[in-house]
Length: 214
Image (cartoon, rainbow, N blue to C red):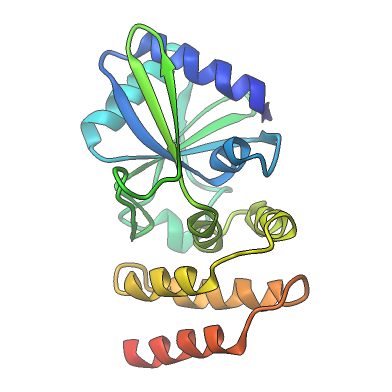
């Protein structure tokens, strides 16, 4: 596990090993820590806008002892075979999940899809941008890892003003590039009804979009 202070120090250290400036988008537990939703995570999830930027980052963390590992045991079969699966690197119990341009087909614009920005200066600059709470919820719903459901409930318990229409609209907009996004989101929302009120109209929009997809 890595706590908030350790994460900040790790990003500063990585900046010392970068060959060029790098900009990335933090999702998952990493973004939740920056947003104050949790204080520790096992995996650091980042999205890069180009293979070159991702490779520069990979070269830096390799110098710190991180080694590439298989996705088995972390993601299920449909995600392990997806063309947009991440590259994974670990060192001890710490892990980086490094995505390129999108997350299992869910496209992200690094230049616009963020609400916070954190700059880490070393020999080069590492810029880490943070997604909105709605995008964090949606991505947690489609990554399907062990702790994702727990993290979603944590956000729901803290935030009382979730924009469900934004979440639904984003999922529908990207349903053609991620064939399971609507199913996974609907399943997540059904489970959340035990914790929070979600209007029937949002479920109806998902069901209608599912019908139109067939």
